[in-house]
Length: 115
Length: 115
Image (cartoon, one colour):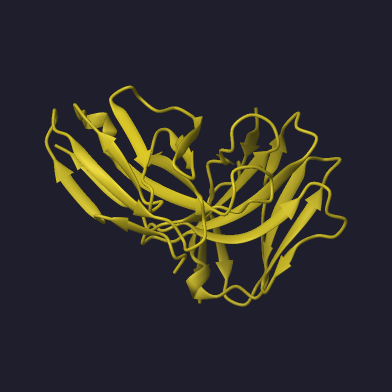
């Protein structure tokens, strides 16, 4: 158990809908990262928050947004869902926001299926 | 930008044997970290081992060791005394000192341990 929690574990929804994925980082970690894993794209970095502020952006679509709350939990909002958004979404956390040695620990993931 | 290459086809390994998973990388960052993660069929991403680019010694964590050859830009994972529970996909990842704080992942190596 990495100490990172994600809910829900599975999510099935229809095209055009909006969903919210939730993540709680490990105790003491200030950084939260979101990744998307799909068969065709592999693991793709979406966005990072550090202590409530957006710190880095990756291949995140405009239909997707995220935030980190004062208690450091984070939510990833996916809207106007398309079939291609079906994927495993991971949240990871780490202590800081800089430094190559800052190990990221991953949650169990949320498997999103868009029908 | 960082690039990770994992090109080995799926591997079958006899229980109790050692297995080496290849990873090569490309980066212009002067300092970087290399990571290996394990993803079993259940889907979670489990951190295994970290190697810093300036570390003089190869990293070891229990049955996992990292064969780091900086000049060749390779960071191979060695799993000794394979167990059935080692059957999984293994991902090599790196994080540089410049740019955003994302982990760049390879496409993974599939390992199946047979009794």
